[in-house]
Image (cartoon, rainbow, N blue to C red; front, side, top):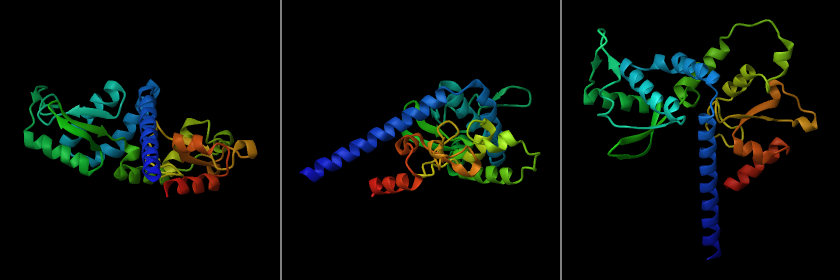
Amino acid sequence: MNEIEEIRRLLASVEARLAADTDAEQRALRNLDALEFPELVAAVIDFLQPLLEPYEAAIYWRLFRLSVLGDGTQYARASTRGLQSGVIVSSSGQGIDLSYRAVQTALQALESKGAIAKAGDTTREGTLYKVCLPEEIPLCQERMRAAVAEEPARPLDQAKELDYYNIAENREKIFERDAYKCHYCQKQLTRFTATLDHIQPVSRGGDNSFGNLVTACLHCNSRRGSRPVMDAIIDGDSKDA
């Protein structure tokens, strides 16, 4: 009986943690600064749109409008029939109704490419989809890493080169280097849920250099505190076992 109670307690703990992580992610997205929208849209245009067929791109942007731009989450409920109209227009500016099959095919292609994912059951209002961001789409991750590798060398700016924690454009380089995955639990993150963690804590002489920072989810970052990295990794492994 004690073993069963312990299993129930552990399951309840895991569910609570997952719920807390999801809530934190959605709060982060809802609090997205307007100045960050251009960067997000640019990432979609640069790294995802070239991989999509025209109908796929049109439907992705429609779902993006309903979710990220609509209510500040990554989730939108939509039906195949509902996406048949209001998605594209003709060269004369008139709306065109897509065929049911065309929408269905585009949705399936978006799923196969990792651009969207079913996140709930289908109801009378449609299916709940998660609209994925470029940094969490494997095909886009490859393009993003290639873009970083191809960046031309720039004149050394000592202040920027030494601080990868406080300067936004440098933080992005850490996240892209780590493919937006938590260094400790390997959870896939986005630009709105990723945090930076010092390998050598500042309190113990660590700095904000490129090599002393790793991507971490909020849970692992807060759990680790100022403990050595290996202690946090070993502790995490023992809890997962």
